Image 1 (cartoon, helix red, strand yellow):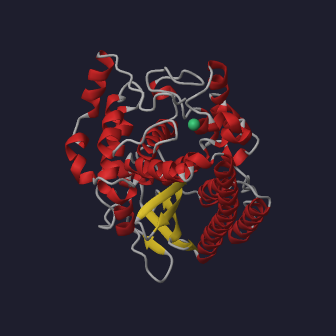
Image 2 (tube, rainbow, N blue to C red):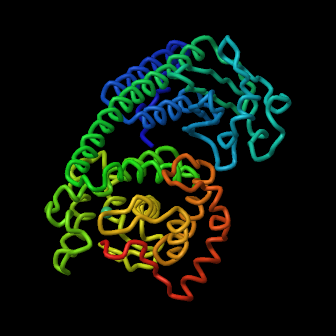
Length: 413
Ligand SMILES: [Fe+2]
């Protein structure tokens, strides 16, 4: 963590308030410079909390970023606390301590006996005597909460409150700025993905809409597995882009799939690496590139290009493998007969533990029961419930013992 100011308390003869103002001004100038020099936002906030502890001789300082709509703590940046401390508090407790009022700040002058603070040793209450907190609007449902903690009972002087307000606002401004930038980047990124998606469709007309459907199934499966939204979004994008390497594959090979020589098949099998190599120079695709590269790996290590096994395969790629196989089976290809829903689900089960990650298939099965409209098939999910009700861990053990390796698309790659 970077300390961006060494406070100077050497002039003991000077007016303490004037000295403080001088230190505070230097601190504000430094933080402001960091904001305008595009320093990472969390680094700016780390700098703010660290210096507040320093200039105010506080026990600790925390800047929480709260999502008031979802009622969650998005993140917290703190300085001066031990592992078990007030920094670990959850959202409901935080809202009890700092009940948002129209007027900032919220001052708790006797923390040891204040009923707003739960009597929990783990919150480090015994080491804290007074607390001052302030809310700041960031953007939309997001707000910042800056709190500073003291071991003595302390009421902050007006100039100290001014400093806290100014620094808290600086933190909120830098967050708002970063989020605006993120939004613009995301729009640009989305446009690039859509452009690539059109290019894949133009190249491989046979699989029209396949990438979008795989992306949607993968997104919902990832969310069902409890992955954070950022990861879910990346898996969706990787679902759209998974076959982007086909852009570099000869047209006549794609058209003759199912009727290729060994040599031609090995050319087709280069598409995951071709695709990943196309994305590699674009740094904002760095998290997606491994998912594209490994979407044809199989859970038991018999896939390609790396022969990776189990957890060596990125989770997003394991999710896309299942959704890709399922989507291919229920839509069919010129050289692969279309399967009905029950047959496709059964084929997935036959590959559990060998081709497919059992946990992914389990999540996929739960997801399609919760989103029956996602499947474009004549039969309903309700008619396949007996197929869907199975413990995948047990099934994986059975399949592994039987050394089953179902290939749901014979003649495919
Ligand atoms: Fe592929």
